[in-house]
Structure formats: structure tokens, C-alpha cells
Amino acid sequence: MIEKAQTRLKELSPFIITLCVLLSAGWATEVFWDFFEYLTKENIMLHRLLKIVSVVFFFSMAYLLYRKRNVFFRPRTRYFSYDENPEKRKHLVLFLSNLPKKLEETNGIPKGLHLIYEIDKDIETIELLKQEPQHPILWKWEMPLRAIRHHMGILETVTLICSPESINQVYMFLHLCEKYNSFRQIRFYLLARKGDTNKLLQLSPDVTINGYQGFDFEEFDRLSHALWFLLSEFKKNKYKEEEIMIDITGGQKPTSVIGASMTFNLKIKLQYVQTNLPWHVVSYDVLLSSADSGELDS
Image (cartoon, rainbow, N blue to C red; front, top):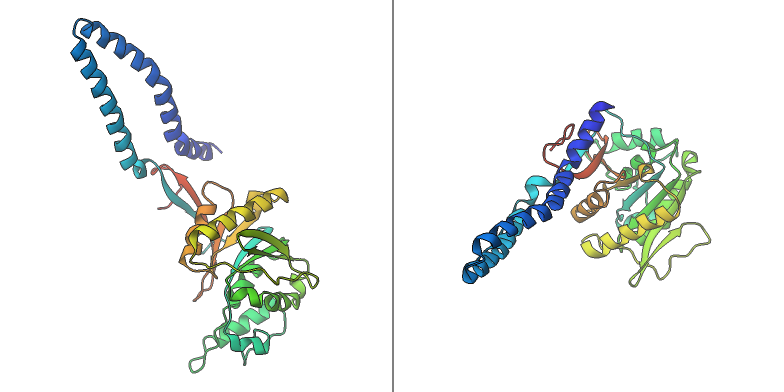
């Protein structure tokens, strides 16, 4: 408890010091100017020159502080090692990758992959098939299934964020998940857009997504705005920050950056499912902190 408080104090120390400097600046300025006015009261030109110098000095220091901003504050992560099991959370956000069009003929499942809809056994089968030396079977939807499986037991909702291509396959993914008895209690949602308007839709047979579009995962600003909208909807639904996990496995590099930025100094965390052996689920906690905060890895 004491170590945690000391770490927190280290993280807050730059802000506390900045606040103290700002509060004391006014007092120091008043004292200095009284002294300078006393010295220059007989010399108007020198008095004016000192005022000009003080303004130039202020802007120079402000610019220097801006240049040195990364010395004081920079993003860092609390990282859970592979030996630790990342905590389970109630609400999972997934970026859904699209499958090749030919897989739509087989309901999204590659030929040669026979699922029995018991998640642990199916994952074992997938692991064996993708290590086949001659014709390995690689399936993009393995990773979202792994991501969901990791939170089984407490998972309540999964929110899917789709690309313009994968939004047309979202019900195919939903039907796949519905075949797993262990997923039956999960509510599935879709974050989509209609023009410039974002919408959170609960997926069910009665809900149509006609007219809605997915997100270009390369479009940073639009996707960032959509995620802020999603977090505001979570807040309206009384989801706590410590109950939310954002999975960045299925997206591209911009989605990783945006996902990380959404979690700065929040209790929301990121997770990533490794796409190669040993296929661990890895969790990150991203924060903006002072460079020497304890218990943090660069």
C-alpha cells in the first residue's frame, strides 16, 4: 500500500511542482518588479528596456519548456508478462478483420477445418492445422475467438468495430459465435456509422445494418472520434473503466495507436492476441507519466 502511494506520488510530482511554481510566480514577480522599479525610477528608457527583456524571457522559457516536454511527460506502459494471466473483463471491444470472399460460401469457415463448437477443443484443432508443413490452414477469425475465450466466465458484451469489408460479414461472425454454448450469455454490439453519425447497435435477428458502413482502419481522425463516441456510450450504460478491454489484434497499426490513446491514464486496458506461438493474450496498461515513475517499464 505504501509503495503504491509512493509510485502515485512520483507520477503526480511534476503536476504538483508545476502548480507550486505557478502559484509562487505571482509573488516573485511582484517582489522583483518593486525592486526593478526602485532601481530604474530615474531612467525611463532602462525601465522600458527591462519590460521588453522580461517579455522576451517569458516567451523564450515557454518555448524551451515546450521543447523539453518529453523529459517531463511521456507515454509508458504497465506490461503484464507472459507468465501472468491478464485479468478478465466484462466488456470487450474487437476490431473484426474481413475474410476472403470465397469463405463466405462456407459460412466463414475454411475447408478442412471441422468445428465441434467447443471452444477449447476447436482452438486446439486450429493450432494443429496451422502448423501443417504442407498446407497449413490460417484463419483470421481464430484471434477474435481466442480474445473472447480469454474473458469467459465474466464477459457480458462484445462490441465489434468493422472495416468497410468486414461489416458485410458481421452477421456471419455472430452466427459462428452463437453456435458456442459458452458464448450464449454474451450480448454482441456493432459500432458503425451512417454518413458522419456514429451508432452503437445491438446485433440480433431483428436489427438490420443496411445503410451503415464500417470504418477505414487507416482513417485516424474518424476512427478516433468513433472510439470516443463508444466510450461515451459505455459511460451512459454505467460500464466502469476497469471493466473494459480493447483488443487491437484484428486491426492495423493506426488502430493500435488509437486504441492506446483511448486508454491514457484510464483504467481501460489493451490486449493483443499473439498470432504465432505461444499464442498468449498479452495485456497493456498505457499511461502518461513522469519518466522515473516506479514499477513502470519503458
